[in-house]
Length: 84
Image (cartoon, rainbow, N blue to C red; front, side):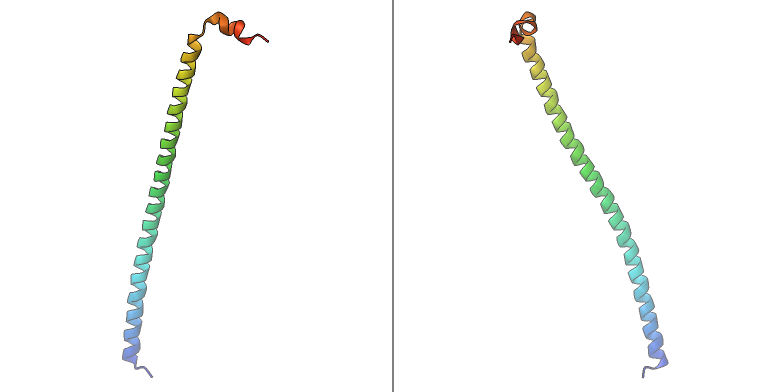
């Protein structure tokens, strides 16, 4: 049977281990929250970049189409171009 001194020592060791684990848990929870926030921001940045590229491509396409339309004479597009 364990002596009182051994039991007191075990109790102190367990209490220290519990404190250490609780501190580590709190730190990990904070780190995880920060990492989740960083990941969310990175995903938003990637999505914004992707959308910006798509919008730029659409703007370019619009300009090209407007320039092509401008090369046609107004009478061609108004009457001759749409004859059935």
